Length: 267
Length: 318
Image (cartoon, rainbow over all chains, first blue to last red; front, side, top):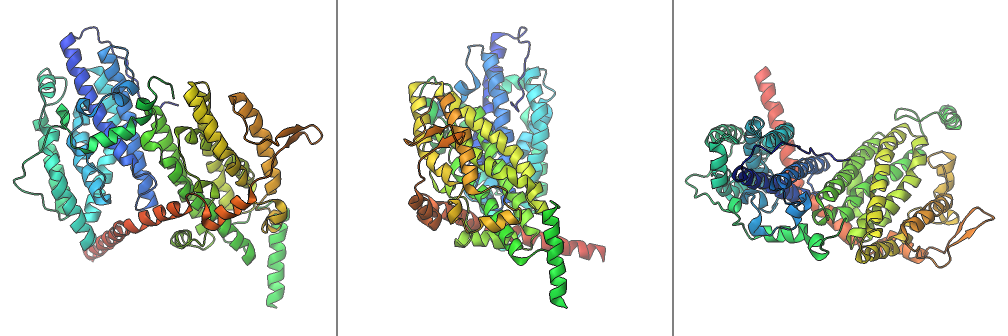
């Protein structure tokens, strides 16, 4: 039973340069979903409420399923015979392209919810646009993922409000999570050369348009949650071009352990 | 007067049991029947929740994205089973909070099998194949158990469990057909899980204090020893098919009884693990307690927010 979507796209009309750009970008989307899904899956069995254990596993499953579709499509774009697992399990941290935000450790439930909230808004508005991409591969995966992201964005916003406008302790914790994670939010919207080139060619949206929608969403939820956005923050970046935090190496050591210890086997 | 009413209630109850009519939450039932059910259903729910831990241990290390997704979804199913079993037990008048407190204090038990560690990827296959296989054997008869909410919960649980077992067997098959290192991994996991799985059916009939009454009330449908024998008879051919050696030198086919004779379970180990001296008892409970305690502020916040919201709505409506 495969729950993921496998795109089959006619790539004949693409120049090698375009294919390389699309490969790079698809891989970035795949890495982002996988790393965040992996982080969320670490909660499984350890959630604060059984119902939320289930909810986080659900979101993790959506993201891992989505990453599989992207990896499969990336492999198709590359055309070198690599598989989804080759791409996920046999690349080192410097080759991973996810933004720094999603590799940050789980911390407490508030940190996890904040990381998710900052990402979900971006993810939601991006997928909404990406469904209209002239590239049918990306558009197809985006259409399926958009439905899931619509649920995620609601889940994390509700928890931001609950924790912000809950008890004194929960407000202190979620505000601290915001203070710590805000620095990683800018990278989501800082376009890499690949993203700029694809936006220019009309394959993906320009992120400045996404940013204004995201800012409005975030401001509205933070106001309801009585949270204050840190001011004049120097935004970190680097993940999307392979410069990661120290956390990613450990995450990959765990994720890739069996494939690295027993190369070339079927599992 | 009262004893006459009580007697007729009891007669009506016994009549339903005899006629295979389900007992429902609002029906009169003997106190001991209620107690037995709360004990059994909550134990079952706890087993699902604690059972998430040994398998959850491999989610982050699953060897392919497909295996990772399947394992995560399996462990998530277990959380779901826990939820509806807690709900079924709640219909008997015990709250989930109370049941969870009993688990954390050590008063309530859960299946001892989850006090064994998962040491390699093959353990995930072995658990699916053997442990879920034994669970199915224990649980399928419960679809006909006399208490309605429990029986209905079991319909759904069993459906998902049989999917789990298939995926466990499939992992074992992939390993057994793979490289020598994988086959070795499979055999090693099988060696460790075989005996603890046989212990899942509980003590021998002669030493099972609850069996007789539970059978009479049709909570239980088969004895521990009957189910254990069936399990061995079912699994030995499967192990042969996989090319695995059953770690029991006394195992042999008995033509006369049309089943296998097999060695004696290590009952000293069994009772020790039940009493808390298994390899992971302390870890499992402290992990659950930690999650619960560290989640306290989240539950308090959710409650406080819901109250604030209700108050605001009341003001708006006034």
